[in-house]
Image (cartoon, rainbow over all chains, first blue to last red; front, top):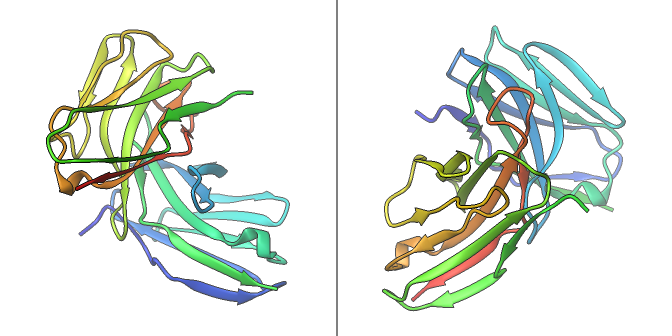
Length: 111
Length: 114
């Protein structure tokens, strides 16, 4: 079993839809949770960064962490064609230096 | 502009011909790392470096070497490339090796070994 599981998709939605992307994990020591966005032929770029449980909002993006269920989510409101990319979840334990990545979910937002 | 720069972006080579992929960061980051990205497998860590002259193996180090002689540079060396090393490679860096220091990535090197 992988430490981090992420549905690879692809996920196709119409413009304006609310998108929900999710990851589950098995290591209860993970404390730092990240979402990266990766456009085609580019490196991953940090989108959201949260510590422990709870929600964090940044514009149209909301990251949620539920440590009791070992489940994290990224919500994208009013999705745009420019949001079409691969979204990678990532996590790290407190004091740890190794970041573990999910396989990524490919998202297509149709105009 | 703060960035991680990898070269080359694309590389096609033959089995056994030594190659080096360069990585340089201009953010004075202590931590640097190499990943390979393969479909369905995500990003897997090859090697990492906590600081100058300090390197260690990641999850998939076989067939790779690295060095960290200067803080800004972290080249990836394939002494004798094989077709199973065909992949998309990313260099990444962060200010410190853990906690509140997310990774910054380069734009990748697509390597094909025939």
